[in-house]
Image (cartoon, rainbow, N blue to C red):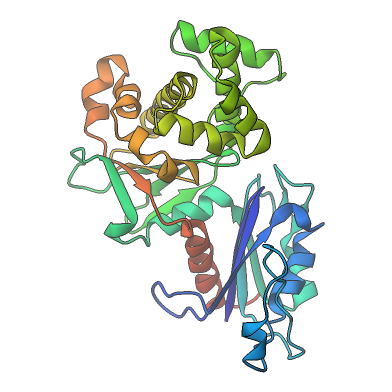
Length: 357
């Protein structure tokens, strides 16, 4: 048995797999609100004790007194024997240790191995995990933005994923298989392309010492773009302002923009999609990822209609003399939200077949 984890700033997904060869479904999968835990160790301790099965039909029939999901009662039985584990983590992994970017956690593979008696534990960057995962996706788990015209021989792939933050990864073809490379490219300097984006940068510099692409291409980034449009256009409807204050700002803005309910939200989505396309194109150009670019993360599937309207691809291909080359690169949206977990599981499965150090 192996354990895989996708550790994000908002949610963490943990799963048990009986993975011997090829992709399989998890034996058990649970999701946790990351901020509710002081460490990954506390979360794993809870996860590895399996939920207690109901003892009678009365437990199913009991009426809930509120809308909250009940905490699963845990069994007293011994946790399963784990042969290997891999955790994809949002943050730089150095010597199997990571100071998480959006959580106050320090995760150490050696400590996890000792505490949970797991012979092999590997930490990898979350986008590296997702990169391993895209190699396992089925055709119905992606949506195509640009079919392109990839070369007959395998070339590099790129992955860019906007969610709570922004992650980037490159997959190099080593002659026999794709090798994902970790990256912290989402923290590179935001580079505006036109007067409107220059004004956006000026706006953001009033709030941050360093304006990276993550400050723009993320859930909080969409909210920041909206604030810039609001402050410059002065056309925010009262109802939208109240909904943003009461709910998830990025989700509210996205819904209002996609449904055409407010011009200010549509303008924010236009700017977001254009900058997303430009940075995806930058990544493709830097690594010559002629076999394709994948958009992962939680935002792209929710904004699929916007990404398909041409705004994204116009910015992606707008690279001067390289416009024709950019048009030949396939661009796809990852629709499976468990892709990083699948990738981490594939790494753990490979570890389980190697001798413990």
